[in-house]
Image (cartoon, rainbow, N blue to C red; front, side, top):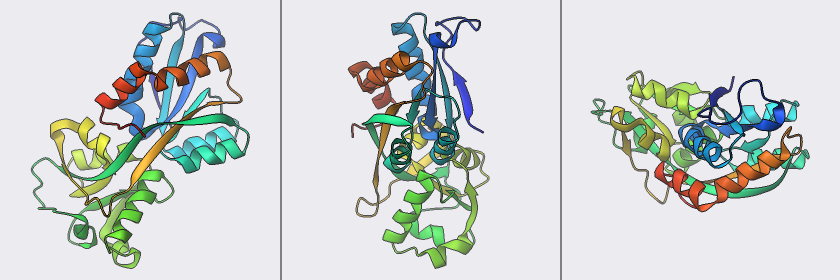
Length: 246
């Protein structure tokens, strides 16, 4: 299930018609940033309310292709966007932020994790995102580049989480010794976790795209939200959460 995060409520009331609101389907790693973006957009667009439904990009893609309602799609990769565009469910995607991976450990790093090689250590409690979601695909690519092969990796991974926020939560709670998430998620967790950089020659950059959906109930509102995300104000909010320009 996607996580629903409503805007601040300065738009239309709950009884207003569908044309007074938009639904944004966004990657889990955009949860906090898009909450603030939605609040700022509502303040700049009186009478329009934003609901952000966040979850795994692949799950959101499948919801869209199955006909679930939505106005805007913002996955954590270009592959899921390409699938939606190919199906005719979205048009004119635009790259709007970039991110990269980082190892995350609980505050204090009591397990003494130092780098990617530790993800082959069966004595540690380790987690990745599931292979079908962008953070999981990218983490496996990074580990392979670093020489932590899939064969050696399999027995050392204790959990494959459905999205990046689920993985981060388990590390924050001390249920895992380490995971691989986006740098922005480590920043969002604050003092509850620590980040360990992945060497540049092994790390991968990921670009996020955004587009209005062709089945949008509010196409004008969808276009306005996309434009706001791409604007200087929208980009400044995203940068404050650690996202980079693509």
